[in-house]
Length: 121
Ligand SMILES: [Zn+2]
Image (cartoon, rainbow, N blue to C red; front, side, top):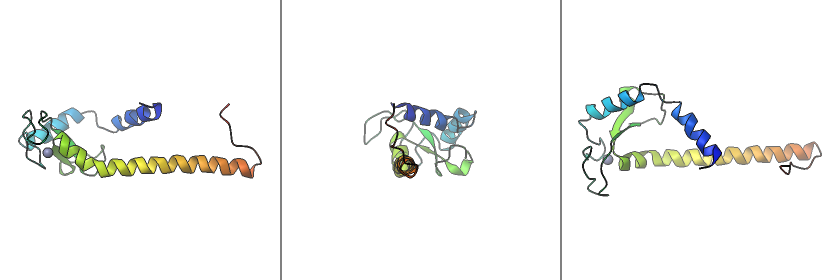
């Protein structure tokens, strides 16, 4: 994993409240230890993938800070990944664009100031 990816993960983890484990467990209990999207049961083999079902609490708005009960759903790994996938793609694209804009801006400023872009020395 790149240092940037590691820093991003650390920053994401810091967005969760201190009692997240407890909140997550209560969401799963509220759902009767089932996935609220496909109905698979905690600890049982997933009928599609065959792997053991581990439920997690998903944020419908993708904001870890928002632990309002209406924003949280008990989801299996499969449904959680599916739910988050479009959001992850958007995030990756936005990060790429931001990096591109930053490097283009750096090059443009160097041109305007009559300096060659830094060669990283
Ligand atoms: Zn599911």
